[in-house]
Image 1: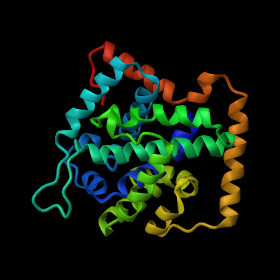
Image 2 (image 1 turned 90 degrees about the vertical axis):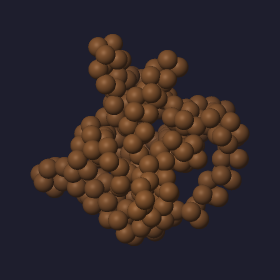
Image 3 (image 1 turned 90 degrees about the horizontal axis):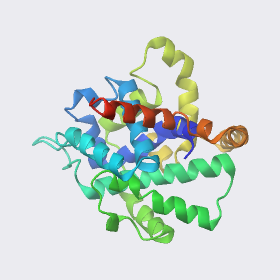
Length: 262
């Protein structure tokens, strides 16, 4: 796990997850106001980063506790009579898609930062990434058996990707252009966020959202990521994990005090 990549690539991964219409509609229509990114961006970011940290760095007991805490919010996320598509946050197929996006994002980020992975490391990363789904409600047997099976699954999902106008407007205004943040924060970070978000997206997703990209930007993106990776190699392991390690400690503190985890 690479903490800086989770920060820089997080918005792109959200877009990938919401590209499946039931997931996108579930987020846009969610009635759980306390967890809405458009209303509470910092809280939503903290919850997501904590989830990643618990899934990959926590204990089995901590994953079970965080699953139950997440279930409390997910119980309210289901389609209504007027929803254009049917969805339920407990649907294991949708959770498998979310987990697949998180794995794809983690693998792409590590490759951009540190270069190609050898087969042993790539297989280990793939196996452990099943936790992205099993820390929710996805049964372990639903995770494709190996990386080749995952590639087949991923290709089978791409034709299903689409954004309706409401989801597309939400992603562009709220996620890409930092809509929930204060004006001075948007002015300071919007261009940087758009650059990294577009860079982390596979081309198919860029095309669906109409995000401009080209060879020059791709080269610049790869050089910047490689530079970040070179710096990270020199840092102590705990610094490479920041802020994931901080969010894991915060979850453990909140749990010990009996505070809500999400």
